[in-house]
Image 1 (cartoon, rainbow, N blue to C red):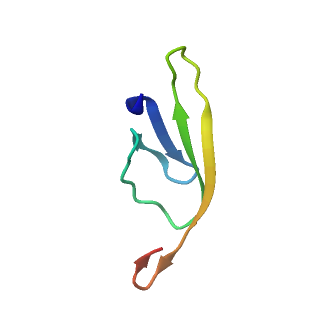
Image 2: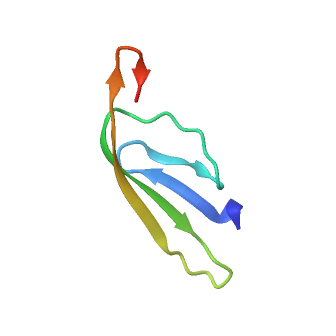
Length: 60
């Protein structure tokens, strides 16, 4: 089922698919959404909001 997980950002758009993704996020408050297509074709979504902050030493 991991290949059926699609990740997206309210700022950066599509982030990738799978259980683990590697994405560069733009600074700011954004909502990250995981959408899963199950065996019956249903697509529940799970979302969280986070603050991405760039600091002098890198991203926090």
